[in-house]
Length: 256
Image 1 (cartoon, rainbow, N blue to C red):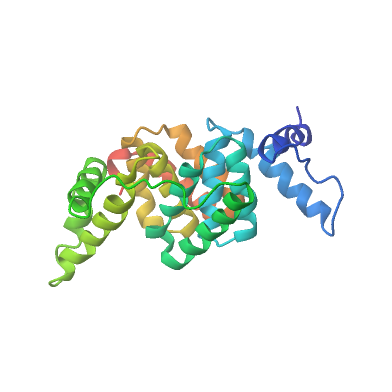
Image 2 (cartoon, rainbow, N blue to C red; image 1 turned 90 degrees about the vertical axis):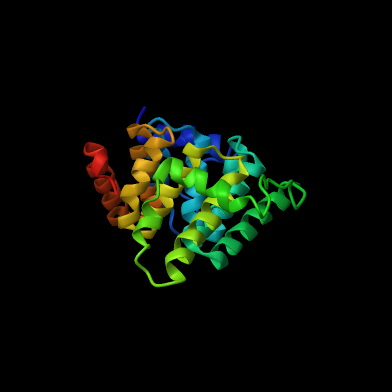
């Protein structure tokens, strides 16, 4: 099966029977290049199912605020079997990485997709811990994967920043989001890795490669999520992320 045939097979599996571009519109050649790369080559490379691939696509599109494309891929995610809760959780989890305003924009786009598909809002809640429990629960999750690395790194800051900086990370990302369930630890770590790659956060990438392994991901899954994100974030960022992942996987004890 060549990549044109592969694209023609994969595209309707994601977009509800729709066919890839065959010459329509003002830029049909550009769309064909895009579709044959993503849906005819990359979508067949590595051990990920379509559900996980669409979650990856959605968080990268959220990071880049590509909201029209996010609406399309939100629909594709639902079509491939991602639940509304899973999709919402993937977008919510972007907030510590891309910030509050961009996450609000992204979830608004996803909510438009939910509404268009007859999904009532708000969907059910997923909070699992109380305000009093969030910090300790988040710390347990964080230290099980990353130890006390962040707290140790910022210990030399003056008061109160030596406490506030690591506590915000622990409470916000791990306490507010990672305690919510819905997505398992491996999925969260792989999506976090993709977000860091999309942002060009090279220093944090190494630590999260190790985090993915500790959460149960394989080397093949790590390479696959980065490759799948590459067409959306561009070749330089994609290749840099794969290069860093390779360095860490060849010497995992040195991954930071």
